[in-house]
Image 1 (cartoon, helix red, strand yellow):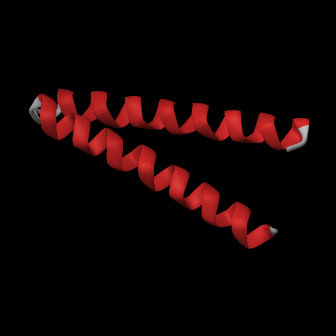
Image 2: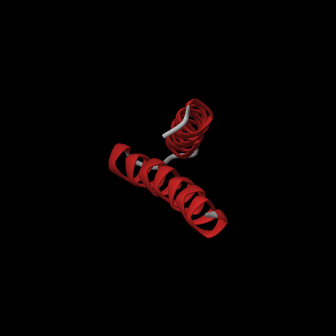
Length: 60
């Protein structure tokens, strides 16, 4: 794994974590319970990383 690939992977993980946090906080503020907010945040992180890894595998 090259340095650029590692940096891109870390950037994608950071972006997924930030999106998941924003989704969880937004869901919690709009009245969802803690478990529903956590589920929404996890789905966002999983979906984003799934799209990222699919794009990487299609590129190679």
